[in-house]
Length: 121
Length: 107
Image 1 (cartoon, rainbow over the protein chains, first blue to last red):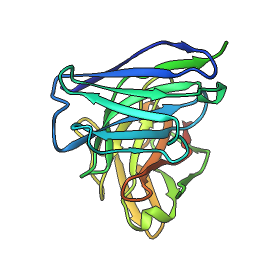
Image 2: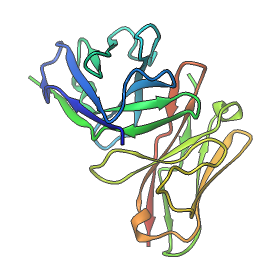
Image 3: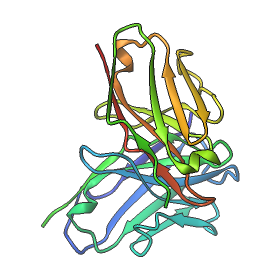
């Protein structure tokens, strides 16, 4: 059974870079049928797709509203993919989820449990 | 970019049928996917494609679509169905969008 687990600092200072890693277990990240994605959810608000990357790292897509600040990368040797979000503000405070994206069925499944990142000095 | 619009809140009596809707231009091209999220938990996929349920999702959940509107129907709502429900679809070949979510209360 595929499982995803987010990890990284829970507190980031304004203007700094948020960095998170998603570790995939129970299956290989190097599966040509899937992309790997980050989705965030500010406290009490809805879900927002942040970006997606193919296992090879050669193809990636970012939410246009975040595009200038987001970088997603993949490390197949560690079965991990990562998110970097630069120049963060309080508006970037959210629970960040990683998920597998099945572009054939157009669905995010499964999801990690999520990790809360707070932007505060 | 395209948007998906959901009613913020819907209620249903225990055992009755409820429909949760999602509207957006992208739904004319792409099927909606539906997720259930309970407090403090990650979203869970409940409906994808034309009307497909992942293993473990009760058959009281179903999906449908017409024009720019997608619907999630729960036939015989149970207390454990009380949750937030989000629709999702592509808004282009490369971008993805979520609806604002619907809070379902089972009375």
